[in-house]
Image 1 (cartoon, rainbow, N blue to C red):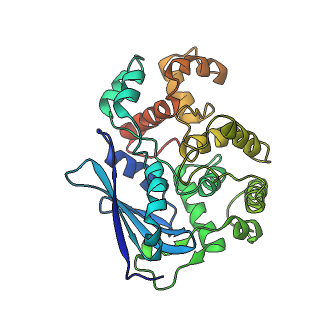
Image 2: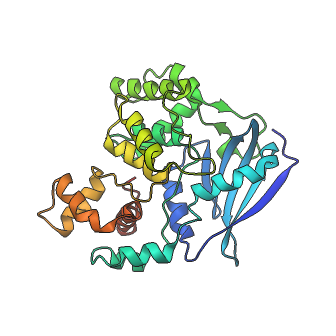
Image 3: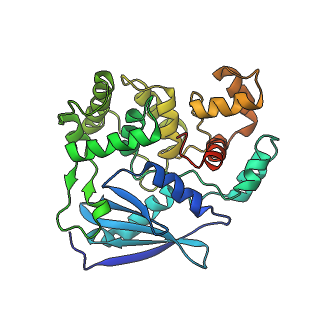
Length: 311
């Protein structure tokens, strides 16, 4: 990878933008060896249009924008990279409108006041995110991170002479993960089978889950078709589909109804709301911004426990 080229561009956002909480979310879920949060910045190895590089994203110290630096040949494609990165970091959100809507609910009003610029952190690729979601089934966020790191070593690719040791691996491609030997990696056999089944479906093009993340997010019928195609795969349930819709497909109304932390958070506010159907009915007033409501509820728990729970 060439390190001679360094390309920088800015991504303006509408204030407020809660950069510390965005970084905290990414840091708690960073794939070891592939991405890292350090010194107030997000960094990862990238491949784009056949070119490699390292991407670093920071918040500008004074201006209302994020500053993106691409080291390496991938910087030649800054024009097509910029919309993708903007989507990943949710710079197009309208925090005032979203916050005003959610603050009409007595449960959410204090959460919005605490974190008025909260964003829904996206993902570099839907495939990476679905792998994370499957690996994270029924385990803690910390345990999922450990398992993801093992997958990267088993099926990913080491980048020779990489300038940043913390991001010196490429995430496994769908084809590589589908064929990898995942014996004794620490996951139940059924989950490994589900993971490799998804990888095969993505590699073959049968489920093009990354189709909408480059410069636009899928909407309407496309989004419904993507949901249905992913849900039809063995080992994929509604929580995984909604989580992918929320973070990768950028559906602002996605709602992972069976998320344990969300369910506990709602039940703690109203003990009569213990079933997903009743909880979904309670969230109807949060439309069309339920993904942001989910972030606020997750964030509340994280603020309280100084840990990483939910999502």
